[in-house]
Length: 543
Ligand code: G1P
Ligand code: ZN
Image (cartoon, rainbow, N blue to C red):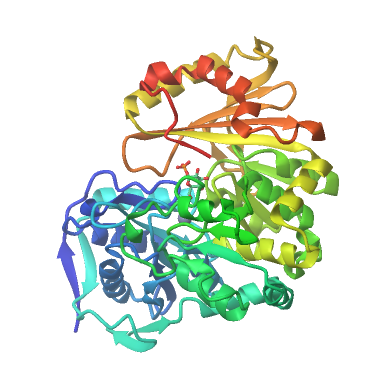
């Protein structure tokens, strides 16, 4: 077998977004489309002679095919060793864990996260660097630049290899080691959490339901919850990863995880419910008849972290994305911890984590994690909650209610308008930006605007600046309205409206969320003219 050079031509628009390159499967199936992008990655990262690459994906349609192509290109690029999850499977957090544990040069993760899969669904690819985290913007910009000038790529002409059996194969001098995708990840989890306490919890009759949504968290959840921790068989539902996620939308919010929600609302509901997304980096946490808002979850974990072995020594600091509610800020203030506000997207936490400035971070979009890796981590968040439930003896609802009583409640909601016309979305944002300039001091409904701007972030570690990260209208009492356009959608544009207000009075902690936020929702519509610009009367999804 030998390395061959193939002539090619650039495709327009191979620009990686917040989480890599995501496109419809059909686009990825065009001749040389994947190859061009992989060549651009390899070109951008420079020589990798003898180095180790981690490779795997969430198992969606096209995953197995892409794995074979990338293996042959990695061999042509001089990699010495590839750690490949069996069946081409690796959750995003497991890939991050492996890169760090084995000192890999980097990793390629095949996923479109929470986007639907199958032949008509989405596919995606992203590169993570040696710290285990997503490539920084400078690198993704370089990758993009290379895709636009590409005229050839290099690939081995080796035949496809068996990726379903644990063991070693060789492709043109490169060792391909097919590994159990779960083992190293599970070992890391057992170091962070009190597995004995959780085992005792399950032995006492505690019941959980974890919905893997036919995505890659299934094998992890079964091995860890049912295997290591003794949860009864069947505690994990939809556990087998399918190429089309069983036709579902592997995004763990109360709308998509309807079956799980129904189980948690039933009379004989399990004590604890949870779900994860396509690539297992997100988490949804539920109690009996109760769902925990991701922003509250982050705040509860921060407040209770001292109860968990991996965080017993205390947290260095916390971070949240700008649109995430300020609930965690209140915890940080009470505990005397630094709290950082970053733009949306996990990569912005990387520098803070690498510099040891924060131990815990999270986003409102069901993403939470810590310094144990450089990705968000769904199963980790579920284990964190299980650990808290085990050592406190309290229910999910009790823990959250007690949290509100202690810190106050940040009512919070996100309204998504999916698949709207891109030009309409742009003009809405442009008009809003213009309005921001004159909003300070204005009275709107029951609120007075303290300031309004388009969020600009200066990274405290490398001073890099990210502009236009979302329009925020902040009221004098701390209530906030935030609007931004999604960077991960693949059809038209998605407008996200985030709403938040703080309630200190415990007697007022139990209103329906949308009712509690009604005043802000009306103000947002008045300011942004969502109906006028998009023609939509209602959001597609409310979380
Ligand atoms: C969405 C979430 C964001 C998350 C990203 C990747 O991005 O809002 O918090 O980091 O997915 O999972 P968006 O579509 O809003 O750009
Ligand atoms: Zn994901």
